[in-house]
Amino acid sequence: MSWFTLFLLSIIFIGIGVLSRKYPTFGWRMNEGWKVKGDSEPSDTYIDSVKFGGLISICLGSIFLVLGMMTILL
Picture 1 (cartoon, rainbow, N blue to C red):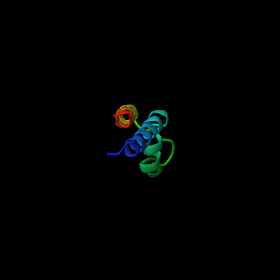
Picture 2: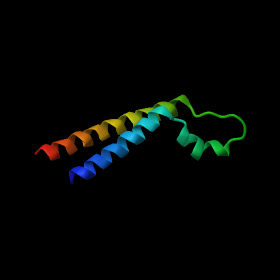
Picture 3: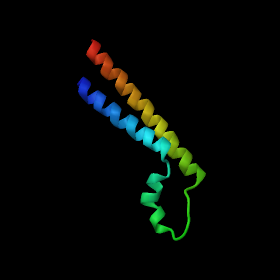
């Protein structure tokens, strides 16, 4: 992979991770929230798993960023 591709992937992964950590219920509202009448919220387990997935995404993006910098230096 070229350094540009690694930087682009890192920006995408970090961005998705930050959004998942900051707004964990957004995806639930788009996929499931419209099916329920009245006020309904996702479970705490769902919110925790989305936040954990966001953390994993941020870690992968950071790894891609470091690899991209290493390819420039080497």
